[in-house]
Image (cartoon, rainbow, N blue to C red; front, side):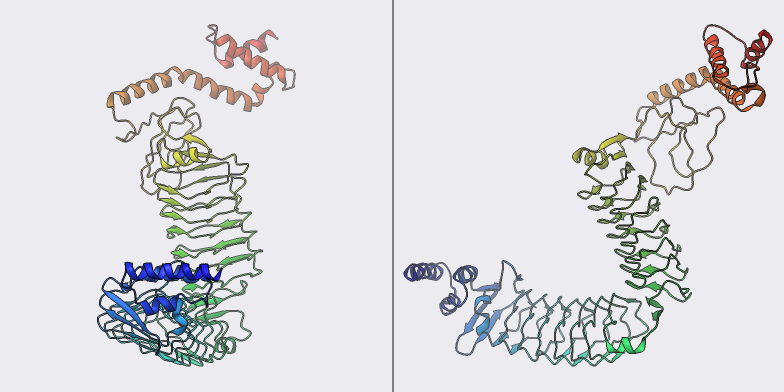
Length: 600
C-alpha cells in the first residue's frame, strides 16, 4: 500500500512541475504525510496549478528560515475556510515570518488563517485593506504594526491572536468590524482613532486583560456583546455621541456591574438599557435598547413620544404582556422585538415604520388583529409566524413578503395581496391543512404564487360584486351600495385613510375608470348604461324592501292576522303579498295588510 501511495504522489508532483512554475521545494513540503493523505493532495492540487496569489503576485517560502515572501503588485486573492485555502495553507505550521513587498494593495480574506507559528509580519504602506479572518488564530503573533495607509480591517481579522498585547488602529479606519480583536486574551491596550463611528458585534469579546477603554467622541453605535467576557474591564468612557448600544454590549464587565448594581432601570445616554416594565419610562429616553424589557412581568407598557427606535428582542419572551402603546415618533422596531409575547393582544404599528423586521411578532399566538400601516415596504422572514390572524389585508406600499412571514398562522383563511408585491419568499403562508384564500389581481405575482403553492386564488377585478360596498376616501376603490352589478377598480398607490360612511339610500352610480382597468371607452359606456337600466328596474323593488323592513319592526304590522301572536302565519301572509305582485297585483304592502284585516 505504501508503494502505491509513493507512486501516486510522484505522479502528481511530476505533473505539477511540468504544467506550471510552482516552487518545487514547496510542492514537496506540502505533500507531507503529517496531515491525512486526502487533505494533503487536495491542498497541493490548489497550490500546484499556479504560484500566484494575485494576478500580478507570486509567493515563495524559504524552508530554512520559515519565511513566506509575497512579491508583486495589485490585489491579493481572497480565500475562504472551506474549499479555497491560501496556497501555503498546508505548510502553515512551518511559516514563522511573512514579508509582503511594497506595491501590494491588500491582504486577502483568510490569507494567513491559522498560521499558528507566525511571530512576525512586515506590512508595507501600500496596503489599504486587511481582509476578514486574515490573521485569525495566529496565536503566536505578539505584535503587528498596521500602517496608516490602511482604511479597512475586515471582520475577525485578528480574532484569537492570543499573544497580541497592544494595537494601534490607523486614523483612516472609521468602522471596527465585528469580532476583529475577539479572543485576544493578552491585549491590554487599544488606541482608537478619532474618526471611529461604530464598533461591531463582539469586536473585543473575551479580551480578558483589558482594564480600561476610552471610546472617542464621534462613536455613535457599539454592537452586541462588544466587551462581553472582558472580566477585568473596570473603566469605560462612553461619549455623549453614542446613540445605540447593542445587546449585552457592556453587561458582563465589572464597570457595568458596579455602576448599575441592583438598579431596576438603567439608562445610558438617554438609551434605556434595562427596565422592569412597571416604572414609567422617562420622557428623555430616545431609544429602547436590545432586550430592555426582556422577560418582564408587566401586562401593559406605554412608550413615550421621545422614543424614536426600539431595539432587537426589546420585549423578548414577556409572556404576561397584553398591550404595548407605541407612539408615531418611533421609526424603527428591531428584529424579534415581540418574540414569544404569547399573550399580546393589542398593539398598533406606527405609520412611521417602513420595515416589519424578522420574527418581530413570532409566536404572538393571541394576536388576532393587526393593521400593517401604509408605508411599510417589506415584511421580513417569519415576521408574524404563528400569530392568530383570521384575515389580513396587505397595503399596496409593500413590495416584499419574506419566507415564513405568516407561516404557522393556522387560523388564517384569507389574505389580500396588492400587485405592488413583486416577491414572496418560500412558505410565506400556512401550507399544512391550510384553507387559505389569497385575494389579488389577475396576472399579479400573488396569483402566480397561489398557483405555485396550490392555494385558492380569488381575483380582484372589474366584475360583479354582491356585497354592501363602501366608499373609501383618497383612493379609487369605489362601489355602489345596492346588491346589483357594481364596478370595482384597482386601488392606486395613494395613501388610504379611514373608511367613510356606508349609504343605504338609492344607489348612486359611481364608476371609476383607469386606463389600466378598461382601455375601451365604448365598453365603459355600455357598462354604465347597463347599470343605469338595472338601477331603474329595481327602484320599485327596493322601495318595497324598505316597506317590508318597516313592517317587520312596527308593532301594528307584526301581527298581520290580528290574533295577538306573531308567528309563521304572519310571515306566510307577507310572502303571499309578494307572490301576488308577480301576477299583476298593484296594491302596496299596506293595502294588502289592510285587506286581510278587513276580510278577517
